[in-house]
Amino acid sequence: MKPHRSAIWLVAAWMAASAWADKIYVFYPSMAKPNVVQAALQAKLAGNEVTVFGRLADFTAMVGQTPPDVILAPKALVDQFAGFKPFLKGSRKGATHEGAVLISTKPVNAGAMASVNLGVVGILDRAAMNGFVQGVVGALPKLKLVTKVEDLLPLLTFGSADAILVGEDQVDDIKGRSQAALQTTEIDNGTIGLVVAAAKGDAAKAESGLKGLGAAEKKMLGVDSWTK
Image (cartoon, helix red, strand yellow):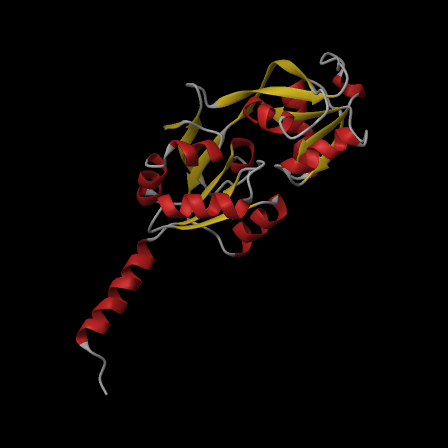
């Protein structure tokens, strides 16, 4: 029996839509669960295929094994992928970067960071993280790398780190999850780049979708707007 003409048309339309869909990989460490962020973004980026990763190792492995059309990640990480060209920069309060903040249970001397055991989420491999953190705090502390934001607080609780390093947008969320009287110390001139969207080729569909995200979805990515 020959397939009905309408069925053939539907299959062709589905194949055409799939061919035009952008595969988007997202890596932005936060307290939000990756599956929750993925569901929220996918709902707003209809027509695109969104995958949100909670671990750097999984993100980098999939970029290599099954390359996406678009990556959305912290600027320092996006800069590691030479084949991807940024087309949108995340912005918050008019800036494409945020202040770097130390959170600790005791006072920390931001001017003597080389002697500090510092907890930080690994957004790059260990070698690259050394240079990244040194550029942010002005010295090379003894790094305690974790894979997820929620793993930072236990470093303070169990005394494995003297302080943890985060962007200013995550301070309230982290402090709100601890019963300890946590202290914050701003790093003079220390900044961390916000998320950047980059693509290998044309990303008009993904760009349109990202610009159409609501306030809640953008907040999940640590931004409030996009800029070129």
